[in-house]
Image (cartoon, rainbow over all chains, first blue to last red):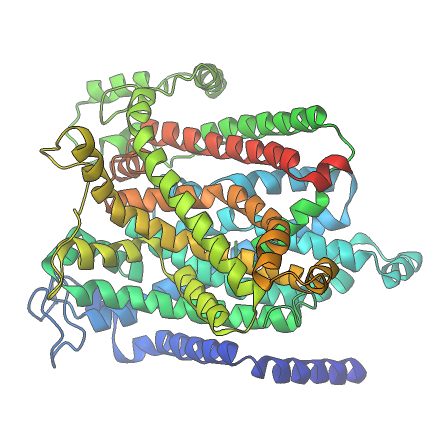
Length: 293
Length: 346
């Protein structure tokens, strides 16, 4: 046990040393940590009341001032506080949807790679079918039909975004299972469960980490798009704010703060996830090592 | 799907392509697969739209004044008074005859509505796609040829930022700056629609439409081209170290010529595959862009159906969009098989 532990510790240290050399990745990681801490700490300073239309204290669509550093929206609510509170929804849905997509993708990917024969063929057929479906359109239909609660938005995004993960994981599973120690394991009587969970899963896990990070980025974009197109029932997320700005004609009336700032938050967070994910990918994926840089 | 993943996938797709079959057999197999996919779409659509929690008619009637008789009539019109298997047979029967039902909102056949709108969608997405592909391939090839150069770093940074920008937000920004005008910048382009109310005739009409198309088109190009750039860059990067490039260099060819005549044609293959494989992504972008700029196309029709909500219209447009995406993918597969000599002769 202790040998394994030391080995893992050393691997982790080597990984961190490698990751640290990617400056963009480190910057991304730092932004992420700040964003997540801010979102988690929000209830210590403000509460859901900031999203209450009636309690909006400022002037309507007022430009940034000392009272409201980032201006106000159409009901006089502070844009700064809305963005802060909204970050919770956006990040939560981003993480949960990416998690769901990863779980589906990993399970089906490993299954498709492990059970060759007809089970694998059927799974790949289904994966390819999902891959072809226009994901945003499908997610829109799902959210419109199931209603726009947080859970259904997570499901709509998760169900439409797993196929690429499944393919990636399947390819990796095939590569892992071609190695001799799997044969040795089978000879010693290891079953499907043992091989997939003890040998394949730990081997695909690093790749999975990189691809989850990238998946969170695209889940956040999809969430904001769904909210903007009006299928989300969440009262505050960055997408809902932008929907409000569009409905109230902020673009034509010159209320730039109402459009610029929520969108900028999306871009910064998504960019941070992307930078982080790319750095992870370069560190963890031997195929990319040395190629892109 | 992320850029890097799609790149690997595109490359995988090239490698996995079955080589021994003749073109006809290959095309037939692909067509069979497409038919199966379409059948799966039809079945999935049927069950998806029967998943509606509660009574769909009641959901439809939300916020409208409807008497119980009207509700009953509506229920019968949608065929909800029949059993599920009966409904299924009826639905499949109608769908394969291209009868997509009657829109609740417009009181007109869905297929007619689609027919009216499809032209403007093809115009917008077609133009945007051509521009995005050529720009992405050109810039990606230059960036990948000299990795680490200033041009490369600039291109990669631009595309990563654009990749992170939600389509609709970019549209809003362009709307704010170039249509509404901000500060000293006057509003240069129209905010909505495909033509002016008092649209002129002849050539002036073409100019009018073109002017309406600038902002929607720009939005789509900006978001879509980033991924082509990144994929093209990484596939050119793969070619840089190849032996044939060294040979060409040893023969004394100019650097530019090696890139254009030797490396780029080889690097194009995964990129072209990706363009067609990601057609669904472009369709999603079209929905968003058309919704923002009120471009009277298929995407806006779909968006309106969701906003109302008009489930028959939603179902019809969804079916049409998915089926055309599947057909495009299949066509691309076959065309690709013809174009790629490595697949053909092997």
